[in-house]
Amino acid sequence: MIYKPTYQAARMIAPKVEAIFAQHLAVARDSGEEDLAPLPSAHIVETIIDAAFWASLRKEEGHSPKISLAFLPPDQAGNPLLFRQRLPLNSDTLVKIAPGVERAGIHLGVWQVEGELFLWGTTTSIPNFCFVLDVSEPALLVIKHRRIYGFGKFTNIAVLKGDQIKIVDVNSAKLQDCPPMLLSLLDLTAPSYWNDTVNVLIQIAVSMRSHQRGGTLLVVPNGKANWLQSIIKPIQYGIQPAFAGLSNLLKLDRKEASQIFWQTALRREVEHLAGLTAVDGATIISEDYELLAFGAKIGRAKGKELIEELSFGEPIVGGGAVLLHPAKVGGTRHLSAAQFVHDQNDAIALVASQDGHFTIYSWSPAQKRVQAHRIDTLLL
Image (tube, rainbow, N blue to C red; front, side, top):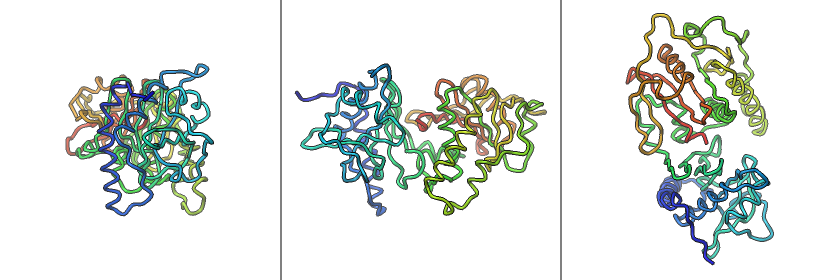
């Protein structure tokens, strides 16, 4: 019996995904890049998404599968773990094997022979622009690819949530005063490394979102104390002297230690800092990543007006910027973050909501107002 996909969102998005990967691969080849992944056809994309979607709705011993599927042949997988027999690509197989491959960085390899897709094994190494599909939670799938230089978070292409389809729009980065963090998430900056400051901020954002308690992170200029005007005194958890664990790591010469050391040490410090954002109130760090306070209460600075309007957008197709009252973006946490940036134009605020939304607040000199970018589509 020939398997026919039935998930309509997969059929709708598959041709667009093929076109996006074809464009990426063409540009990379023209630039002389090597170790490029094969192009997934629309049919392949649809079939992989369909199998993963139906698997995501099932449970094995009470647990929903969380897996990552990568389309590549075994000979492009570095040092792959190979199954003796090919396994069929279907929801039954994915649900059964999921408990053994749900750790971060492990991909189930998918390949095609004579028109049939199958699972050949697992790998922790994939080529540039390899098609990857992550099953994050029931009915939530993320299409992404490995960055061309292999460092940092994978670049998201699209997110499917049930019948909702969100396709990332790189043109959103053409907006005036686009935050560097958003540019990096859209893979539009120079190569990012584990200790690149923007990439570290992305790692903190991912960690903030993962603890699911919500939180606010304020990044303030080095050597300035103006931000104190927007904080209610006394600060319950002030840090004196400023804690420089993460900051000191970023200042070290990367050649002094192995890549494994960097990844382990930075991940530990990132998790430490991001964990503090779960405490009620805002966590405050300097641009050099020195921890200044956590659990701080934000208030309107003396002589400043209440923020009445901001520019809000999401980097997806159809998510262009609109003018809104800050209260329409989120609750009290969002409103206070927007007010902080309105009062302290040289600061930025990152806000994680308990429902999974994540927003960057920054000041736009061109628009002369606060701008809010919802980026959870890029952080999944």
